[in-house]
Image 1 (tube, rainbow, N blue to C red):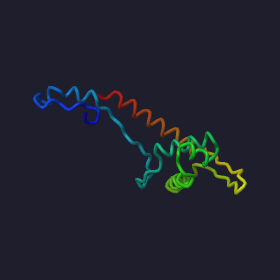
Image 2 (image 1 turned 45 degrees about the vertical axis):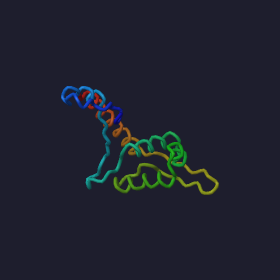
Image 3 (image 1 turned 180 degrees about the horizontal axis):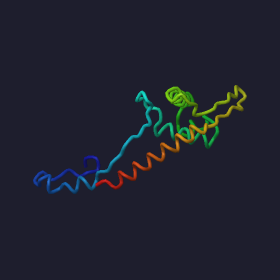
Image 4 (image 1 turned 120 degrees about the horizontal axis):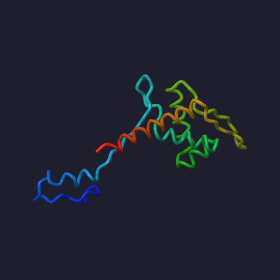
Length: 130
């Protein structure tokens, strides 16, 4: 077995078995939103992180739910905000006793919604391809 496709019988021509290969193949794409400098600023991971922050109102809780460190989550948000020149998340520090919170901005929520919409549309297009 090679990638889920049975090895083709070498005595038969490949052209006679093309349908075996094509029937097992599909398409997958990775989508990023880029800025004017062609830098990736928003992709699937950040979209999910923004959605989780919007749900939990906490970067810590969102990161934990995704199996990601708080430090990495904060890095991803900060890098995207720097590249976009816009805030995605408003952060309120809570200190050692807790009490901090995070709120997704309207811009961040809209960006995640636009990303998911583009992702969905591309998936629909790919499903129609032979």
